[in-house]
Image (cartoon, rainbow, N blue to C red):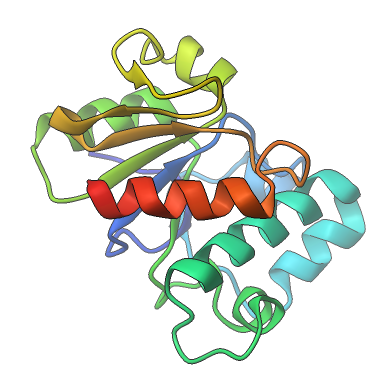
Length: 168
């Protein structure tokens, strides 16, 4: 399987997102890329608030789930989030990589970021909706969650997502 995204394929959880940072390097990416020291900061500076929010929510989630020795979510974001040696994986080629991963019955958990994206992938109807925000398919260890935005995936919903991850 050919994965396209950020971080490490050794991560226990594969996160799938429908968009890619609107910068030539990322738009042309054809493999996994381990983020470097200033990459997240530069993406935020060059693309505006959207990707800054995505990375901040991701860092908050990972910090609450497994702080990995960091004192704050900001430290985790700046020093570890989606680096090659990290325990995070954000995939851009959703349907292709999801089908290959779930078909191999690997031990990964799959998180689809956003209900609209899950529908686009044909997964929204295959999962059991727990409420209007979260759905789960225990057979394929798949969770659908709100988009990584402060309003959609608030701190309370981050905690809910972590509880669902623990069930998979």
